[in-house]
Image (cartoon, rainbow, N blue to C red; front, side):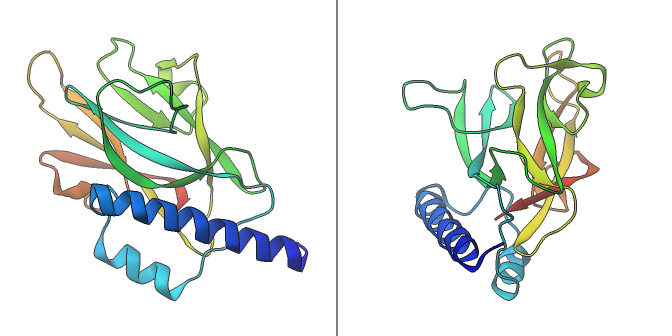
Length: 186
């Protein structure tokens, strides 16, 4: 990467993080943020690979379904209400990235993200099937993106997958830790 590209990448990331921090100030902290994530970011400056186009990874909630999405154009909206920003993913592929697919449970009771292009046997969304691209291995300035599942919800709902940067599933009870999806900028 040329020096100019690197300078531009750091400047772009700084601007993106500043914008998100302003939005975060309105919403509180990042959704699922742990205190140690901010400390880790201070120690390890962000490095954005060539080809990365950062976009927010937002969390929305509709009824009791939590789901992660990219922002939509201002004339559109996602169903439910926005809880906040989880972090940043790339709109475009980059070296060492994996796609994060937008999936829906076969009975439509859950919306979730997955690295599996077959959505783990469920339905891949036809509109915006890829939520974004994330790093497969940890890069400087990234944090793990975990997937958790809340269980025992009311009505016919048994569970709800959600993404977070919190290794303890944000202490949502009862929630099961399912693993690391990849790494996002925070």
